[in-house]
Length: 125
Image 1 (tube, rainbow, N blue to C red):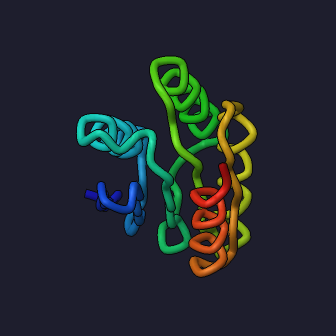
Image 2: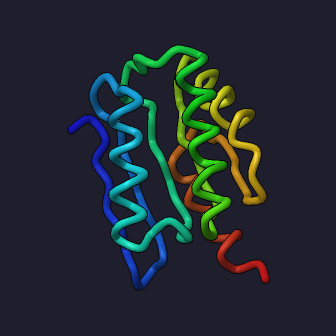
């Protein structure tokens, strides 16, 4: 499974890491798993720096549209994407531009900065 995630209900946090080439089906499995486990409204960190993304621009936009679908059917939490490489950062930007929903979303080069930002989101009213 290329996308591995854990959900902390006490912290209201989902942490996901992509480690292998990732497909649209892998992301859809992640969305379905997080939703089924009650974590869609939680803050999320998604780390994509260690994977060669095998997704086209159209696929990334389609995933952004999928997020919009989830947002219409319930609350989705803030998302911090960690993309250390230029390639992963560019792909994260395409996804972020397509996922135009009312929730905080930022792209970071470092995991530590993503954690700090997400903590600040949880602390703000």
